[in-house]
Image (cartoon, rainbow, N blue to C red; front, side):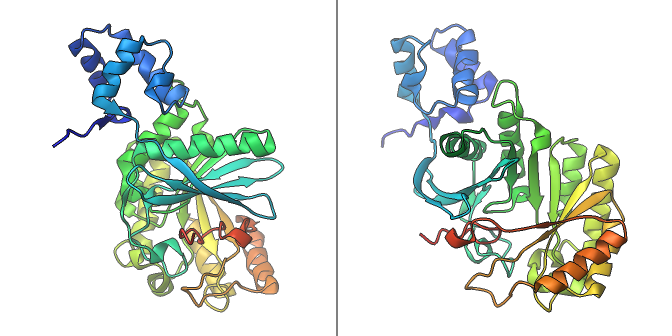
Length: 346
């Protein structure tokens, strides 16, 4: 049976150095290869032009690069671009470029599918097939940045881990991908321009605090009432609001970072002034802001978006109480690229 080649990007710096020593090459080759992989984002060993042809052949005998490839893309009337990326094992994931006057934002995935089964999210109705490798997360950023430059002549300014999957259930690879994206030896983007969104895994929020992360944290809350949150987000049954409150307090105390609460307003479910008051009380435990998100209906769910008047009352109540609140209008709805719609329909 033919031995399967190892993905070159899975080698640590030390492993790469050890490999070159084992084949009689100088140690500095390791740094050269790392630069090609993470700074220049090459996906072909033959593109590493400062390595001799013999050295490249040695690498190709033992290693491959399991990069992702663009399967197809769709462009919305509002300029949003949704991409389906094919992984080396045939799975598909989706990523989105969200262009505005001030920002070029990449919304990227961390898993193939999702295991959390949130009742309003199309991805939640898929099975989780596997976690993404850090390099597969990194590749999404590289490819969506190319789209931003091609279509809008601007580089990415922001990255949000809000695509398919729960980032905190792929913790190690997600943090490794952030390192590749932010490191001076990688893409050298600012960690302050990166937001990782979680449905609420309390123990992993505490781990973020212990690891003293510098990126931004967003909690997909959507209800500040235990019973209601249980109905729409099964994860709440094992990660209660009380547990999340405690974890977020710990997180802020350790890192000093504020928290963003994401809150979708569903018609006649979580959009009353009582719901707004519950949200107000929850936000007061840590310095935070609230993003009210327009709901994007999906065929698997009966939820609908709240009406404009109710939204205004909800927002105004929070504003009067001193909450930093914004209403986020959805982008890319016509191509199923908006929040909660990623499900590989094509």
